[in-house]
Each structure stands twice: as C-alpha cells, then as structure tokens.
Length: 295
Image 1: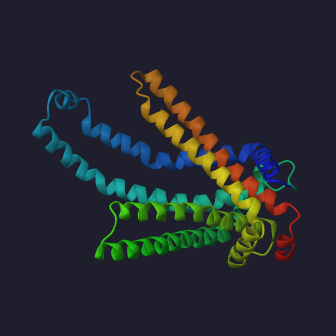
Image 2 (image 1 turned 180 degrees about the vertical axis):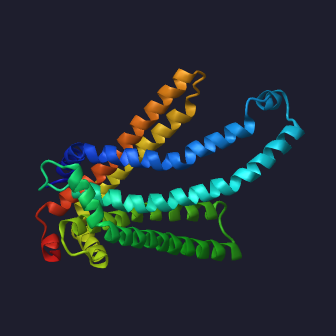
Image 3 (image 1 turned 90 degrees about the vertical axis):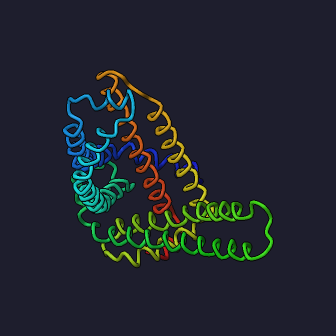
C-alpha cells in the first residue's frame, strides 16, 4: 500500500468515527466552559454597567485602571487554579478520548459504536497515560539536546570571531532539526497507541518499543505520510486563527455566528486528528514484516 492509499484509508476511518468526534467535541467544550463562563462572569461583574469602557476610550484614566487592577488581583488566584484544574482534567481526558478514538478506527470495526469508544477509552486509559508521559519526555529531551548543542555552538562562536548573523542561523537550524525529528516521535507514540489497542496485554513500555521498531521499519512511507498530515493540520490551524482574529463582529447575531463557525472549525480540527490516527492505524494493519515480528 502506498502513501496515498493510507491517507485515503485514514480519511474514511475518521469519517466513520464521526460519533466519537462529536463526543470529544462535547466533552472538550464542557471542560473549557468550566473556566470560560466563570471568567466571563467575573470580568462582567468587574466592569459592570459602569462608564469604565467609555472613560478608557476617551483617555487613560488612572483611577479607573487602579480600581480595575484591584478587581483583577482578586480574580487572578481563581483564574490560576481554574487553568490548573482544566489542564489536569484535560490531560486525563485526552488519554481516555484518544484510547476511545483509536478503538473505533480499526478496520475490523466496520460499524464504530459509542459503546466501543467508551470501552476502548477505559481499557487503554492507564497505558495511554504512560505513553503520553513518555512521549512528552522524549520530546523535551530531544528539544533540550538540540537546544544544548545549539547553545554550545553559539557560545563557542561568541568567544571568537563569528560571521554576522551566525547566532540566528544556528537557532534556525536547531528549530528545523526539531521540526524534522518531531514527526518521528509522534509516529512512535501513535504506533504505540495503535499496537496497544490491538493487543490485550497492557504494556506501555513494550508499546513504545514497538512504536520505534514500526516507525523505522516503515520509515519510507510513514514519515512522509506524517509530514503531510502535520502540514495539513498546521496549515488549517494557521488559516483558522488568521481568519478568526481578523473578524470583528459588532452585533449579537454576528457574535453568535462567529461562535457557531468557530465550533464547526474545531470539530473539523478534531476530525483531522482522527485522520492522523486512522492513517497510522492503516499502516499498522497493513502486511509488514516489522509488524509481524512485533506481534
């Protein structure tokens, strides 16, 4: 199977998993609402129906800024604790939802169901937690090593005579190296998750090892595929952000339409994530000597 076949297979699998995608959107929206709505209420009570906005529009008013800073100071602890809570719950939820999504992307599941989604998320929860932690550690180590080498080169160049702009070139090269290595680490994590879902034994460390062997065993097709998927995801994200930031609705209806549009785009982003998982699952299920030895 060539790269285009796996890309097509991943797209078909992600479309079949639309129920799981909607569940992910609902849960993420609910999680974000835990801090978004209280924050909105706090800011609204801080500003209220006073003339603060008009005073700030006319000129900078020191008294108004002082009063607002006092109110914001009281909100900061609540905002900080809220962000920490959302981050912690999001980390846990991500492991559960990713396990469920991988479970319904397999080819053997011709009709993905929500029951299978939730069962897969629960069965692979702890394994996916460890795989996520190990992947984060690998990414941090890779970035630290590349950054350390770059810092050493810059320091050595600074002690002598270096060409103008040498530091900037070293930093750009370091960023390019990290960008080239990142798809490999993501492939390792995704192959590990796909193998873990397909096997009854829950051994995340073994899954990571199989992720490495499968990544390099199928490198010529898996790496270009992951680069294509990541470019599409990044391009879509950048396009969406640029469009949303450029919109400035002035009416309540415009704000509502902007909200609906942003949620539709967020669902598409989740679908692209499912597409990535589906492509990796397609490669994992294809006949491969590396995969057969791993099984």
